[in-house]
Length: 398
Image (cartoon, rainbow, N blue to C red):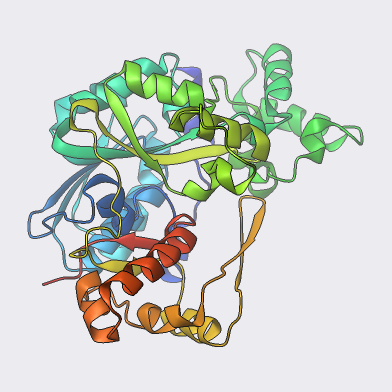
């Protein structure tokens, strides 16, 4: 048994109790259905066709359950394949699906390097896996081989700067505890971490919390035997070299250099994002979407008035009321605080967002002339879409 497989058999990750499915649905990025449509299908996917999806390295099932449940809730058909090396993780994911009555999932134990042997997929989820492979390029290439024409991938890989303090500890623990069983490694490493001196980079990093949540989280963060972080430049280079093209990051605002400083004209888009990552210094994961390079396409934008906007993570009545009253609601995520600064005139447009009306229908109902609507909607989109709060999708349209 490989060291990585042994880890996940001993400590399935993330730590989940299937009984909690009765209390909540864990949602996030990637693999939220609205994000899939927005970033990979320009908000225009034909949802009358079943979504063939692969969850590659599905672990205990967070992304899997989110996707399967959202497809069920919207009445859309899906054929989802779960793939993971760990039988212990798979057992938890299967029980979570069973308790929810999700029958649109096929469970497979195996390596994502063999993904293409399980079919061709419109959407591939690979969250927190590629950076754990001895050869990440082989993983990216294997997933591309399983991608159906016109499809895309949602991914998460580790980023270096927000994980300050992690890698020296990983290296030290790897040297100290090589050959010990996982339980013994965990016990010894916990003792060291508990006695780290004040001022230690790991102890001072407020972005890290997995080690406090569970034994599985501690092990995955500090004792993993194979862990490589990608900065923006390395990630885009990896995508380019393996036949992928970046569509966009789930939270574009984190990579927007213009929100941090004046941007020199000579910098290209990738260089701008790379510098934003360095200046922020708090990004610990890159969450984004990619397509086949030969089918590269940008995310949806409101320039297409036929698209249907959705609010994600916000209640439209609350947001509308706040904007109508001239308030500037505070946002907080990834160590960043921001405020929405929209004019009161935006309130009626926000109130009209219901996941079924197109932009042209919202404009017509508001009585706003086309030029004024375009200017106002551009402000709404910049504030909301850049924060991952506004997405375009036809999933609810009959």
